Image (cartoon, rainbow, N blue to C red; front, side, top):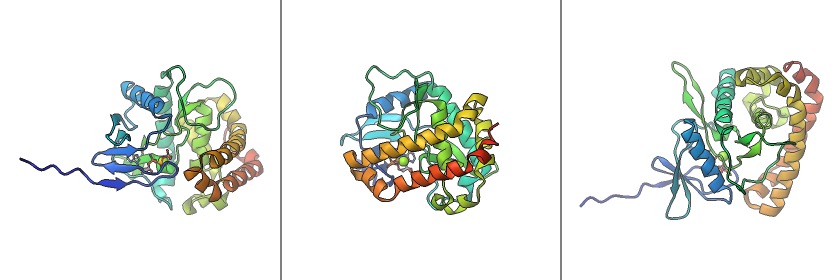
Length: 270
Ligand SMILES: Nc1ncnc2c1ncn2[C@@H]1O[C@H](COP(=O)(O)OP(=O)(O)OP(=O)(O)O)[C@@H](O)[C@H]1O
Ligand SMILES: [Mg+2]
């Protein structure tokens, strides 16, 4: 008789959810009201042959979702040079574009529940990721080169949105559209304007969306502030910790930095 030991549970950290662990080549995460909707999205991505996201394997005996572990590296803070390179930015844009193209053919079920978050005006175009931070991207070495974005993980914030709104959220973290005070050390020397263009070119963003990009970023700052403040009050937990840690102040500083630099940034989008 062979004795099979259960693989150990290795904590993976994370921000708001808590309790994310790796078990063998799977990840276990606590379920949320939005989990069935997110699973439907991930299954659609798999069927659409978008293989740059975790696959859903089910729910375990403790009621946690089971996802595939995506091999590679997730950059830790302080961010390493490879995570902020122009090559990584362009690769990330191509990855987001592929995800959007696959997600655009997904129709959520009637009454699908999504995590609450800021949203653009008008009709949503697709279910976006809505949380493409460096901690939610797995990198892998490019052939003969350094690590570049390979897959998106952590679809916990996925919800109806537009391509542009999801692009803006991504650029907030990666251009970044942020006050230098709040940037990671290596990001302080980055010139965000040319990086907006690198991202938009690699994504293939339309001229119309480029013209609206910075106005959308301003709208998003205002709405994110209101939503995060509300979630900190009503949900507590990780949201309250984020807020107490100055998330609101960072949004306000980001908005002020955008106001001060908008014309210079816009010149790179026309
Ligand atoms: N499927 C996966 N493959 C590889 N690594 C993963 C995977 N899921 C999570 N991780 C690692 O665990 C960390 C935390 O996981 P995750 O991002 O899902 O949780 P979280 O940020 O706490 O979630 P949320 O933002 O929904 O509160 C990630 O930053 C990543 O390093
Ligand atoms: Mg995460």
